[in-house]
Structures are given as C-alpha cells and as structure tokens.
Amino acid sequence: MAHYKHIESAVIHGGIYGDIATGAVNTPIFQTSTFEQDGLGKLRSKWEYSRTGNPTRAALEALIAELEGGSHGFAFSSGMAAIDAVLHLFKSGDSVIISSNVYGGTYRILDKVFKQYGLRYKIVDTTDLTAVENAFTSDVKAMLLESPANPLLTVTDIAAAAEIARKNGALTIVDNTFMTPYLQRPLELGADIVVHSATKYLGGHSDVIAGFVIVKDAELADRLHFIQNSVGAVAGPFDSFLLIRSIKTLAVRMDAHVANAEKLAEALQSNPAVKKLYYPGLKTAQGYEIQKRQAKNGGAIISFELQGNYDINKFFKGLKLIALAESLGGVESLVCHPASMTHASIPKEIRERVGITDTLVRLSVGIEHYDDLHDDLFSAIEGARM
Image 1 (tube, one colour):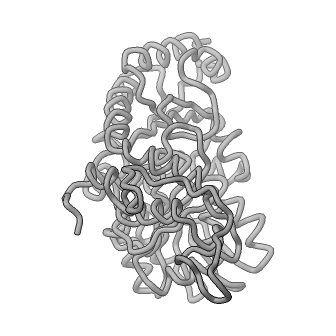
Image 2: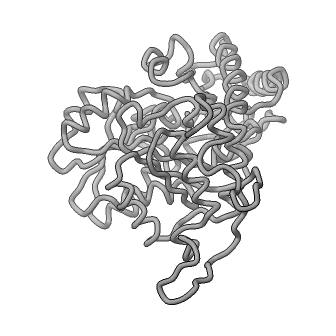
Image 3: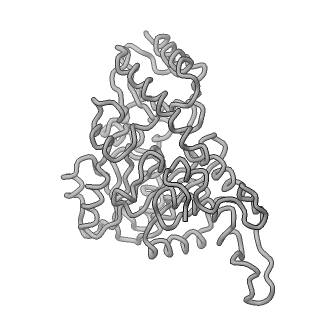
C-alpha cells in the first residue's frame, strides 16, 4: 500500500523502491547476465537470465507502470525498440493508422521495415475526428498517435480518438514522450498502450538510450513480454539504474522546463521575425482547449518558422548556448532542423503536405536560466536577418 497520493512522491518512491535485502534506498545495479540455480528446474530466486528478467530492470518497469497508471511496464534498449515490439503484435494484412506528423523513425520503421512483411499503414490527421472515423476499415487493427505530435505539436483528442478505435475493435497506442506521465496519462484517457522514448525527458540528461511500453491489460502484457524476451532488445541493468535515478527528479525538471518554455513561447509570439509558432500551451494554438483538458500544460517543446527575410543557417550558427543536435528532453536546451534531421526519412512531399517545411525549427527548452536562453535565442534570430 503506497504511503503517498501524488505523482511527485511516486517518481521517488514508486515501483520497487530500494532493496529489501540490504536496506539500500537505491535499487542496486544487478550487472549480471545470468543467475545460479540450485539444481535442474530449481531456481534460487525468480531470476534466471537477464534478457528474460533482471531485478534492476524489473524495478524500473514497475516504476513506469505505476506512473502511467498501467499494470505492466516493459523497458527496452531504445524508443524505437519499444515501437518495434508493439508493431510485432500485428500480422501481415493488418493496417495501422499513424498521425500525419509523427516522429520520422516511426514512419521509417513502418515504411522500410514492416511494410515488406505486409503490415500496412495509413497517414491520417488524427486531430480531425471525422477523418479518424473514416480511416477505419476492417484491416485497421491499431491507431498510433502522438499528442502533441512531433514536430508541429498538433493536439489529438486522445479520449475521443480512442473511443473511435475501440468501437472499431482496434487498439490505441499513444507515444507519450513529449508529455511524460507527469503531464499526461493516456491510459486514463482510454489508450490501450503507451510508448516512450525514455531517452528524452524520463532520462532527462542526454546520457542514456532507452524505451518503454506500458499497458493495463494482462493479455497484452503477456504478449509483449513474450516479444520482449524473444527479440531481446531490453534495457541493460546500468541504463535501468540511470533511468530510476533520473525519474526521481522528473517532476521538478518538468516544472522548470515548462516554466521556461511558456515564457519563450510568449516572447516568440510577439516577435515580428516569427512567421509561424507552434506551442500547445498558448491560448491561440490549435487544440489548446483539448490540451488543457487532457494534460497538465503545453509541455516544453516549441516549433517555429522565421520570416522569409531571415537565413535559417545563420540562425543555427548564431546560437552559442543552445546546441544544434538530435534528440530532446535533456536538461540542456537543444534545437534541431526536422526536415534534415529527425524527419529526414519522411519523403519531402509528405513533409511539406503536413507542414514540416525546410524552414521549420524545433526547440527543446532546457532548464537553464531563462534570461540566458532568451538572450541566446533572440540574438541568433536577430543575427539571421538578411
């Protein structure tokens, strides 16, 4: 029985807390590949082989399951390994609906890997519930959506979309990477499966690659554990330890990320150099009311385009504090160019159709002092004027 009610306490004390054998308040790193047995068919404990299960990973999996309100969590070696495991639930001839602006790696694995085995996909604007309804045919077995989506931060009504999927006998899979369970809990909104790139905010320090899948259905959990064990793309003991450690500060980090992002978004909104701005925490944003209803706030990712008389290459070169790099969600602020970096695997015509232009910038707002971030960002914008 938990002695707390709030997620700020759960991130510290949730899951399998500490170590019963020694009283250590931190879960030990069980850096072992295998476990000695007392005889044929006689396990000394429930542990047998670390691909199948490891005590450090088990503590992490119990923690993420609790935070997302699920019954079972599964830790993988990357976010894409987590997506891969979920897609293994389906078979040749099945179709999966994906959001129209979705992480490039998700598109790539469907288009270049699973399509050759007969798993098809449909790209749908999931913010349009009529389009979602019309996309369901008998072959559609799941809908994989991001909300807010990467990189245009469009907001899908998760509860309404999940209800449509349920009526059509399909699963709803939500990538909750941008929000984390601290800001949004898709299982409580009707989703069947939640996935994360734990590399991002859950890791939070740009020093680990990992992924999660969380479910609340026992039958789905059994199937996913079989896939996890069979394919073997599991999170190692040390990475699991790093994630447990990092998640302890998730609440305070996210509060700091969001505080900076909200102020930067307001400053960008009033700057005439900005042509388009995407941030779901602004009252003028698409889906603001839905975001307000289903999440704590707008998160800490901002995307924007500069006016035509600004040179995007000069902008990137002008940044001194904010790093140009792949990924997001670390304590340091990172900026990227989706068209050539995170979403380069999506064909140009598809990118442009959904709004991922060659001038789009995605900013992952870190937890540095706001004044330093503001000065660096707006100095680079001014320096990019042609």
